[in-house]
Length: 307
Image (cartoon, rainbow, N blue to C red; front, side):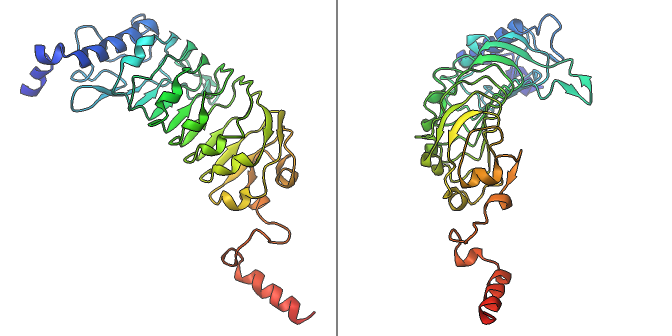
């Protein structure tokens, strides 16, 4: 109707920002097999259609016709990601992940197999979520820290990464960090990891992390899940104070590490060490009056009365 015709107007088609978005999407399309039948779905992707008005598969636009979500999980993308992906300057969410290699023993025929480096997204000044798990990426952008003011989720499990993102202390808005099942041979940044004040989920298991855990980790006070398991060269001690300073913690995992100390003595052989397994100090010195159940108080009073 009258609204759709706007999408074919010269004012719309030749707008610099929208044209840049379309060219960036087409570059990804041609580079990853979209035009050769590799993709599971490529509805309406074509040179003579519009990503927004013609509803390209996996593309969501805002009211100004700029691409804000690019979601193509399990879609058969193969190859390297062109640098022009970073030209999607209004992008909020990027999902090029593979959710699983197989489903109920049936091979995932349309898993994404993206290789090489994830290009710079520094021009994507609104990016909040990057999900590229289940590919064969070898590196994250060297300047990813410049996206730290807006980035809330970074998920790149099951890739071939060899290093942590630079300057993690700048990622103060990050909620989820998932870099498990890679080959990250890096020093765990204990001295400043506590600067990540918003972190809730940190999955770094099955890597090659080294270095020593220390009191600097206490700053991640909003943590729900911390998984550092299967990093055998990771040493140091999880501070006892984390029992109090991480009140929302659900579980931690330090299996197959060289971490020592009180918490380690309770958790080192547990795949998932739930909070109740490590938060009861033998003399309750960590507890406040409100933390102690009435039944415990009543038992202590009874014991003292009969002493």
